[in-house]
Image 1 (cartoon, helix red, strand yellow):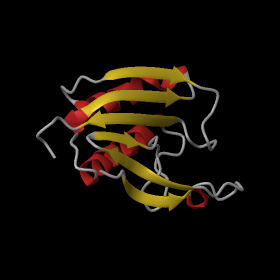
Image 2 (tube, helix red, strand yellow):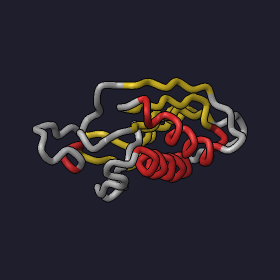
Image 3 (cartoon, one colour):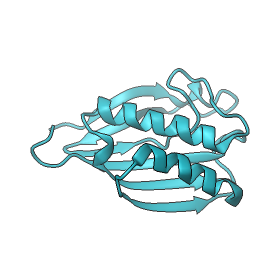
Length: 138
């Protein structure tokens, strides 16, 4: 089966002040494995939610995750790995509370990193997800 690519876009849509215009997509399904682009406060139409508010950005990111997984034929409970990048340790509690609210009792493995910065200064959090659809589902 060929890889399926969902929500193709050009990076210039999101990074208007940068001379980077790569062709990307938001999700790739390779067999039963789903890889998502790191999700932030960006909406799918290029808007941005949560200027100065890491929790609001995490909420938008997790809303995006749900939509992208569903479009690729997966569910939130298929999430296996989550990597959370934050730009300040002070955001950790509020961001993880938001993520926990979206994941509920799903228990993926996870890594949290504090980084010096993300692609744009207004980005305070980025969430990276890998999921696997169990055999017989999808």
